[in-house]
Image (cartoon, rainbow, N blue to C red):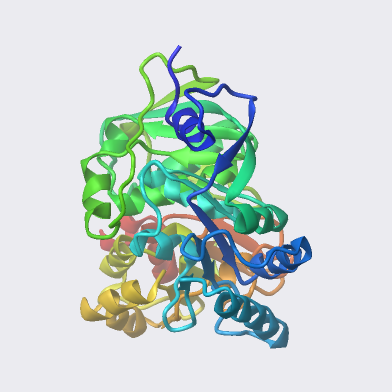
Length: 421
């Protein structure tokens, strides 16, 4: 019996020829990630261990991105603790305000993640890097502390699920719609502790930005990881970013899967997830009349250049509905700069939008777009739980950048086709 890509990566890092689902292993990690919410807890636990320093100053990444620029005194103290730890242990990859970005946009951009690697992060959306063919997963802050000290962590080898997409995506359909379609099909717990593997000609047709979006939301189905086997697009993406050697893994033809699902892309239109779960999905043609108060375009899910270009294409020459607040958040400083050079920032501002420095901000109800009671937001973020973006009586509707931009103009949930004609 063959092995899946997830099993091969875990086996290689555990020093084994093969592993099987359910097996408990200890594996060496290639990278340990923390942010300004999770790293301070890990730092306190690390200091309790009594070790002198981290296992490798080049393999730890610290990114203050959730509440920075500091939103209040508590956020400032969290960021300070992280900064001082980075200086004390000479952490190579500490990203200060002005040089940082939303972590899961930043790390691939900086070449800090590569195919075949084993990456852990004290953030649930660490699974984003599976788009590069890495086994990347979120862990708790105590596990982060242990990994910073030892360079190793224990894992339970997950079963794998395969999702095959046939055909080519239709107009305005991207990675966000594909992953929401999956979640709507199997539910928010349908892939609990599973490695989700995305494949088929429909996946090969996706850009890297769209692949990152898909892998990012594997956790919203309960997935342990969301993997896409590397191909020519993957290698082109990492070519000028990753300078170290790496290994390419793909699943064997006779690998065993707990479940295999197949989808026809021609049957998928832009998808909207209604409150209060990502599984509560409807195609855009069936959303009905839903007025909105706010639209957010950004986050580690959809804050990349392709997302901003799509939104700008719809917003150019148009105005945001006067009853709607449009907030645009580029994923990194480099993305912000590129968007400026292409004139996208001008388009957003002229349309009546507010553009922020990179931050997770409103996605987790932090700041830069908190909702009041009774308000509705259409957002390109990844979660829409009760109170996720503010008041428990507010509502978040998840959608792709095209739908979010069109809705901002229409003042209600709307298809891009309605706006462009």
